[in-house]
Image (cartoon, rainbow over the protein chains, first blue to last red):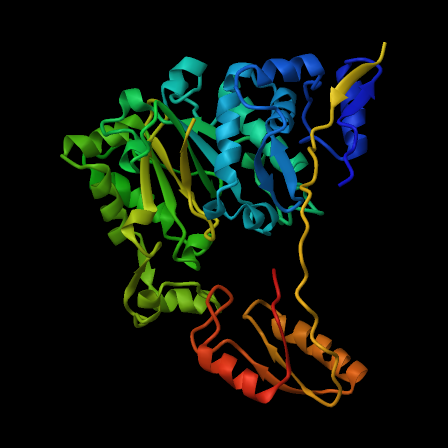
Length: 344
Length: 97
């Protein structure tokens, strides 16, 4: 294997100089970058105890080795503080899990981007935003951790628009896509606990679209609120329509979650309600799609029977994040990917 | 004064992959296509099969899909696999987005 020099030379640290060098190599996400000097990369690596050359994951389609060092380089470029680095590492580990299907995620014509959700002590300890404006903009931890992961996917994985990433239009969340669970205002247990992930801090990765907002300022019962969520889910314009294995992430704001809780609902009740309500007749799907990657039981339904927007209720995941104001969202899946939750 | 910065790319994995043994070239045999349900897979595979048949003096004789209710995401019907095994010596299949 030919090993290229890991270093490049810059005459100075002027932002324009860095821009020009990275543009010349086809690197970067189009935004200003922090120069990954040896000192900055060493500081970034000081937050972990692994050998810098140890490989975390090999990332397709390029097959680049995401070593602790190469991930640290990209974390520096993104503007991460060293204390954020374990979160970035956890994200890369998660993306290397076969369930994610990173080759597909990185190379598809779909606009899919990995959504990172931070849980547990890391949220407050590292200063992630889980409240007002959680999807952005404005918080350094959210913005730079999400960006670091995207830079790793661009540079190490080779998911560059054109040669690697065939996404027809892309989407804004391909710049950065990182939020935190609002456990302080969550009436239920933390999402990782429901999966049996026992860790002080953890990270979930779900590969999907930008969030689809829904709001309800009026209702005092959760059913009427979730009817709006179901309405946002019931569309032919998402891959969940034709790929029944796709998951949904339903991210309720604290007020909507509180309404559900006040009626004695758990998150399973929310999932069940949406599973039953977000449905359309099978015949309408068959009119719209020549190919339907559906579970067998869905294929056997007659045209008049109602089909859910995912093949099993367990695919509808419910979390709490955001601040006051009664807006929540659903995040559709790319479809041929499964979410992963890992300890940080 | 020059400043050194790291490349963000990381090394490519040093992987040695063993190729499958190649099938012997044949002439006068039969070629079939198994279109996998992706858009225009049948057109693409037909063009390739016709070109190949011309080159190696073979007959392009069978075109089939994966079976009833099968699609790009599902496995091929075993009966279809069996039919192809009986009818042809070479099958062309696979097409992506």
